[in-house]
Amino acid sequence: MIVNQISIFLENRPGRLAGICRALAAEGINIATLSLADSADFGIVRMIVDDHVKGCEILEKAGFAVIQTEVVMATVPDRPGGMAELMEKLDAAGVDVKYSYAYALGSGDKAILVFRFDDNAKAEKALEAL
Image 1 (tube, helix red, strand yellow):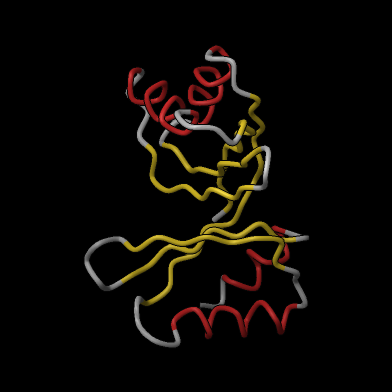
Image 2 (cartoon, rainbow, N blue to C red; image 1 turned 30 degrees about the vertical axis):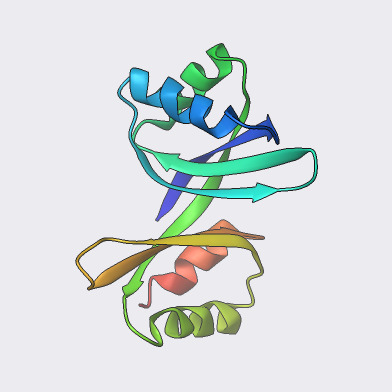
């Protein structure tokens, strides 16, 4: 399923991630998952929230640099080989993974993988066979 992800660029200094979390919480926006990548001077927080439009508005108003990106979410069995089976389908379709992150649903049965591909539509079609 294609969903909208919020990416936030922030300075790599104490309190910046907490500021993002506080701003969203204050307005009732729930963070389903996030990934943080850093470099020496800045970080990129990628997150899926329950209302990406309102989330972007809140973060922009709070002074953060924000963009929206379409990503693909896929559900896999939360067991050894679950992701391998999914990756085999994607490899066979010839799609390139730009980045990915994951989260478990907590029940131990399923995990959610979030992907950015070179061609999201092609990847989504390949994953329909799962």
